[in-house]
Length: 288
Image 1: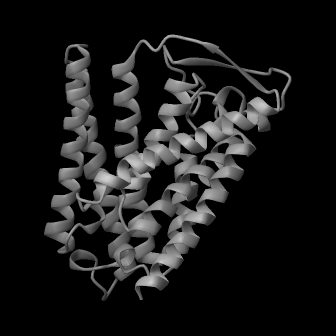
Image 2: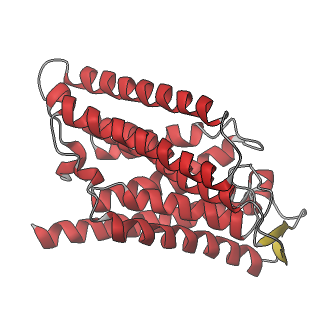
């Protein structure tokens, strides 16, 4: 995996030379601090805004645009390279394709639970559409900016892609430990099914769009479509309402954290991750 040049390209402030790894890690921390401060300030401003759905969605898009604009500025000015991981033309295909894949994985998990008799569904009402769209797309964009574009990419630059995948996945799982209903098992599952999987799509394309799409599609389908908890959090409306068998083992259903803590999700995540890497290797061979 170390031959994927776009992922491990180092120039500018992280160019090879003295204290190379230390400079990469320092740059990673600096980018994280700048991004988190920026997002925190925007969050304070958004709290003062009206609750109009149009304003809410517009504010979410502005937040994403400013965060990504800052990333582009930092990379161009200080890493001194083109920001190929955010090439816009491929996003037209890769973002919606990722959404479909993420939704398909989630639907497959729920179908397995249904076949096992561990979940049933009732019709419900999707009420807070503005919130669901904002949260799933906003979360997909912003978490992928932090977890993949900054942490995974720069860890890969410092230590190689394999180490970058494993460490960033572990950190991604640990970041969900504060969520409602979270356990060590749920965080391990998130690390496996999401941390590995989302890094895999970045590796396969050398761009972030499919990772964002899969992330958003997964969350939207799980919460807004099936009405299941998403990382321990529940929404106020959905197309369906999922009812899990209270007698089923939590390692099957995910318990109060939701199906993301299920071993079924972990197995499917690993399976898609492996397929994604195989695709990436075949693509590399065909273009070499």
